[in-house]
Length: 119
Image (cartoon, rainbow, N blue to C red; front, top):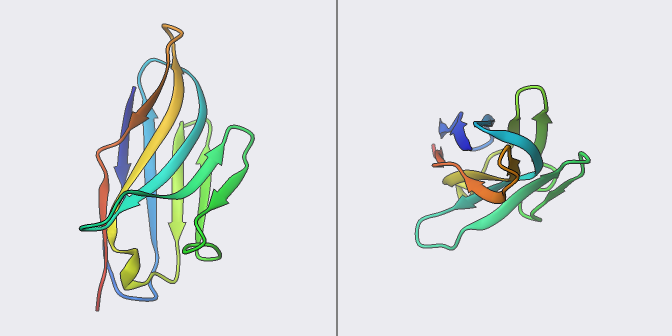
């Protein structure tokens, strides 16, 4: 199973970005997918979760500004980020708990995409 994030970049404060995380490979079923981020010198933190039932949860720091969604036909998770702040600058990662065709359930991670919020 491979996860590939895209959509990161440089944006001014108050701007928006939309991140994508495409899952591919020998996937039988995805249980849930999450967005994490890691800023320089800080621990990786959970930003948003998206369960198989479509339930989303967000870190307090991004509530009201970030929205997670998923296209099940493409096995792709999105993160719409609005009203971006300099403190949102980080490498954003997605992960997925998935069951493979070999009936193995595991947690998979993408390689990350850089988001920089700066004027």
